[in-house]
Image (cartoon, rainbow, N blue to C red):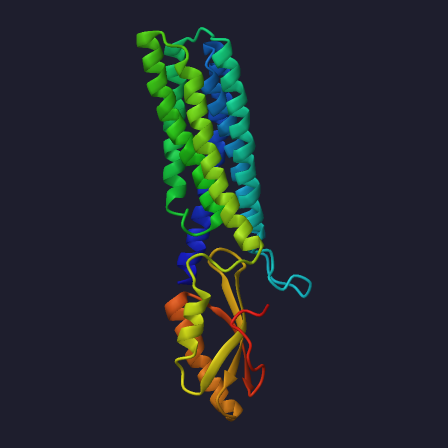
Length: 299
């Protein structure tokens, strides 16, 4: 099991590294092609590719940093480096999207002749590079928010390349040069939406909000089903990363019982939380006739 985990981590880092090189080379190639073809959408995709390359470097650094051991001054270690990287990368996506909107509106006002054949050729190369990158990161995207943010960068580039290829064909056939800035707006909207979703999720974790897929009330109801449990109160639930969820709570007992019995009850509750809610870090404080009239969440 440990060997499989280590292999998966190496595979994840290799995928990030190869994707970085592909996006860097593709971005430079697209800048040259965009300048010679006069295509704003191609230049915008080049800018997106270069921002992806930077995002992948940040993601790779955060992946390695998050594996550093915990210390006395950093008891949670560097796990949230991944979340900070995801937030930074998502903010970059938003900045890029507004830049694309600005350039597109300038081009709407001042139409520009476009070499659609060159635009098509360059976009096709970009499509292949983006397809390889998306394939490399797809299997890792579910494992961390950091990788998910990088994957969404690349997937949005993949969609952009398809849109640019279709646009190049339409421009070649109909000489409708307005299609180029229209594609740029489309790319910008998708980039903005992708960035917003990651920003929202990252902020929820950094603010220590209750994870969206978990109901604190449901947890309270399940714990109060155990024998001798009177109520649950002063509960806090948060995520250190999107998969590392912590819970702490006070549990009022109906009667005084030996420590050995509370240990047994603790184990039963802990097992239920793992199986029902995927909570693997639990801190419970047992009490008798204490904190009467309190609520599940303390005001």
